[in-house]
Image (cartoon, rainbow, N blue to C red; front, side, top):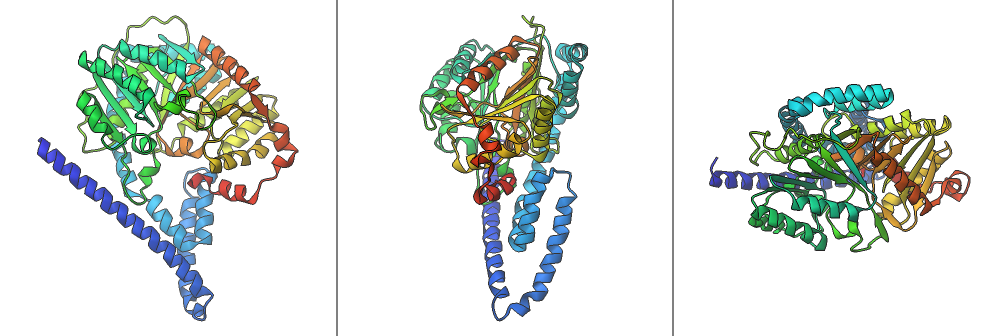
Amino acid sequence: MNEKSTERKARVERKTDVKNGINRMVFTVLVFVAEVVFIIMSFSSIGHFTTWLEEFMRIGALILVLAIYSQEKTSSMKTPWIILILLFPIVGVGLYLITGLNGRTWKMKIRYAEIEKKLLPHLKKGKAGTDTDEAFKRLKEWDDQLANVSSYLINKSGYPVYQNTDIEYYDDSTKALEAQKEALKQAKKFILMEYHAIEDKETWHEVQDILEERVKAGVEVRLFYDDMGSIWFITNDFIKRMQDIGMNCRVFNPLSPGLNMFLNNRDHRKITVIDGEIGFTGGYNLANEYFNVTHPYGQWKDTGVKITGEAVRSMTVTFLENWNAVKSGDTDDLKYDKYILDVDYKAKENCFVQPYADSPLDNEHVGEEVYISMVNKAVDYCWFISPYLIITDEMIHAMGLAAKRGVDVRIITPGIPDKSIVYQVTRSYYHTLTKNGVRIYEWKPGFCHCKMCVSDDIAATCGTINLDYRSLYHHFENGCLYMGCDAVKETKEDFERTFKECEDVTEFYTVGRGQFMRIGQLILRLFAPLM
């Protein structure tokens, strides 16, 4: 396809997006108006004329409710839709039709499935693929229960466990970024960067200067960011400026007017891959506030990990998945061997590292299942830290059951919120958890944005996956499970330091005034899965 044809196709796609978006917006307004008119008619003198229409809608709503109830989803996701449809049939049915049954999402599922068929087999090829089978056998010999968690990731997400890999933990995002910049300066072949948010200010400019220098040295640079995540941070000409520098730049799922279910599925991943041998991930985006250059919510706490060796192969595949699947009009990679490399690396530690990814376009909630598996297998302790706490009944039950059998289950949340409504919903979960023995801590210096779990001195996770519905069900996410290494010990030590900076609010939300949920919190919590 020549350049003019490509541009013509892109213009057509943009016009179609806008048209579809406007159509959805108009439809949404109409269903709200129709609901109001119907309610008014029901209480007016002509209310008897609406009786037949009301019965018709009741039957239709009941059929839809039964269909939703039969879906293979957690009850926490189904209940809000059922209540909304039964209370307000016109609005409920209308919103479900345009957000729950969106054709574009099905198209994206097909496209992602096609890309994964091409990419995932690369994880089982060559030297690295052979070693992953041996690594799993060694993990099973070392800890059978951890091997079960690893086996789940292998079977359901396609991402293997590796040895011949080292992992370094950073208890501060600034330390992680400095290490990342030093590694970027050494790039010789390619740099792959995927972030939810990029802010066109000081922090990014330091990274950009390094990338410009590497481009001039002949290194291929690919930059990928989420449109919604970056919308307040960059201008419309950002992508053009990056391309003028020589970077290959793409935007994930550009916003269009109206309601679009796929717009609810954002790219929340944070990945940097250098030459297929070094990878970085964690909670931080490339914006000033993540490194305490600015302080919108008090002190900011974020963490990250550096992965060196064979396990970086999985991070490369995760990047290439979104890069190639996000838009059919983009030019796909025809060969992946240039990026998915066999790395000859001798690890300093005999540890196990398993990077993984989670997608909202399948029925497998990998991030949630890993967290539940970690707490289910815990014997002594299992600690979590997350900026948000909006979880399913299944996770609440798993945490409570672990605490009842004597496991020290703790959760750290922020002391200063970035979103007041979400913070109210987060606190609404405290009593349910604390009455079952889970301890809740709020980090007083400010906003903790880390997403981590550590258990029994042997395993930990670090990545982008929050303890909320958006991360667990709606977003493209990534994480890393690491076992039997110094990084686990360092993660635990960071938790212990962080606990000292927290207020233990467990008792207040178990027997104090905090145990009573306000009406507003109750309503917000009920519809939290739809937020």
